[in-house]
Image (cartoon, rainbow, N blue to C red; front, side, top):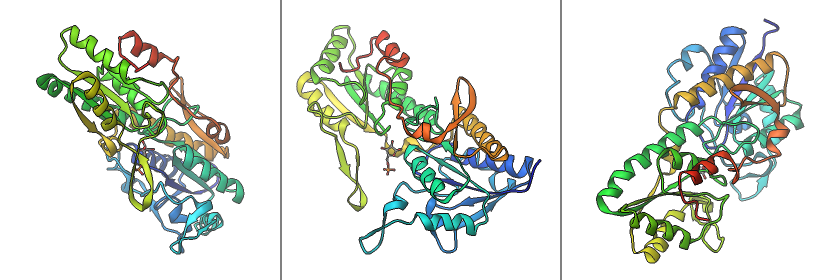
Length: 360
Ligand code: F6P
């Protein structure tokens, strides 16, 4: 089984369902099959920059009851770029060397990083700088990491959004209302288009396709003429106003995040169609919940494959899901592209074929 290794694993960026399933799979493969040691690094790169580094030894007992838990047992952060780290005195500092030193202090032979495109780019940059052995695993409810058809967490988020749409149908019909569901997805409309089709939406708005309020109201009118007393709209959080402005809200520490497009649309739709509207913002519920079987499956396959890459000393690679198989690609290739919804792709064609209005 080759030489003994001590490997580290960390979760970075926003959490999602399925992260514990990857940690479990990595532990099972590395400890169970290869008899290596696995250290779970706490709170992403924070754990490596801490003095002493913060990590816990993972064994099968620690991970066995975690398969169905959302969140991450290791903690994570989507703040504090280590190359421009905000210090308490208001300055920013490059802390990448502290992370590299944390890797060496823990005596790691390799590191597995589970992250979205932003985290993977940062982790790769640190690994290149410190000549660290690094392997990436894509996770994000946004499903916007390139080259992989699926990232961990996306399927569960789509399930949650679809279930919300199922529930909204009945209350919408009971009250003759236009129900607007605002979903996450950052700059890509993957959650909206998938859940919108699966959940029987009448109108789906995604950032990749521009819309007009007039087109939305025409669709509502058409439904009314057909005898439908309600309408279900799904909108992706990054959809802009008609004038093309981002809709954002202020969150803690002066940061801004997408949020509010649902309410913006509700006002305009009710003004132009006369319909009574209500808005549901799903928010972070899309990141929780019991991981779906598909997310657990992909997480398990990615975890095993990432450990096997290390066993073969194939570093600087990201595992991917392509054509029903786990493959791997150079991380540089994955992070140099962005996976948006293809406006000419199958899902958009399907939506149009079903008569769903995409706002254009
Ligand atoms: O990238 C995952 C994601 O949930 C996005 O869909 C969303 O825009 C963002 O993170 C929310 O970030 P935060 O957890 O910082 O509010």
